[in-house]
Image (cartoon, rainbow over all chains, first blue to last red; front, side, top):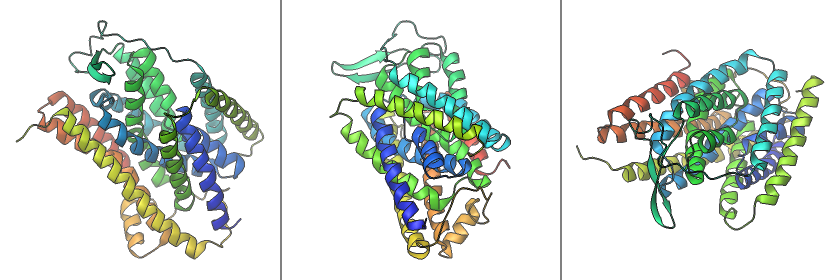
Length: 278
Length: 125
């Protein structure tokens, strides 16, 4: 294929990945890597490099809007970024040490796990009273805007959340994804934050986490400019459109369909890796 | 020195993120269009990993090659601006915490910034 044809097709595919990723809350990165490796025969290293770039673009673009709305807990995000960036550096180093087959298997496992998380209903459980001993000295408790005005919320199990964030960072650096599903899990279930706060704070952290592994990727040559530019522009445009549509359409059915797409991609990745073609 | 409120820091952080993404996308579009104008009819494949390409893997190399008009380096420069955007966000948060005289978060933010600098400097700090 010529560069023009390939760039055009990748741009369209990345746009759809960004759109679906933002509508379902899973992020474009989860789909971009299987799309590039399975549909376009791209080497896994180039695929995770291009995906990581698109992750930084969508996270920063969305965070710019979210931060101003007052949901993002910047202090909590900064504290947890110590865990995610350390993990991401480690993950990026590991990516250079293990075979592409091994990375593909981990990726498939992460796809299945994310499909499970996205299909599961999220339960809102707030805790104003039972804050962790770390929450007060680190000033992690905060307020967020609701229809009834600003409301207080507490933060529980900070060390557990910190540990989960370290794992999320490793997976981000190893697979070139944002690990948004795992970050939200840590904030919803371990730290018990309101939905809007965990979603926006997770997104806020994704760009910084990805930047930590991007330096390693860049030097190793994982970031190919000609491949990365249609991926980044496509995912960014798709994610921006998705964010606009989000308030107007029902995403429940879409998320269920998307969960099946992800399971199919996981199966295809395992099949390709086991036959040594990834 | 005037103190910043949390809201002012949030507004400034939002502006940095938006500007960074717009500038990165613009540089990447220019580089990408120039690349396709020059190499659009070349046959390309990404099926085999070629390892690091000289001039596209370090900050200095990318800037030097972009200035000579090498189209792939111009794209890479845009991607570099994108990678720098969250780093600038952390740096701005550090300034915010300094202005608020929040020692705990000055230290936390400095650690995050150091990890990012370590990654981008190639582990040579």
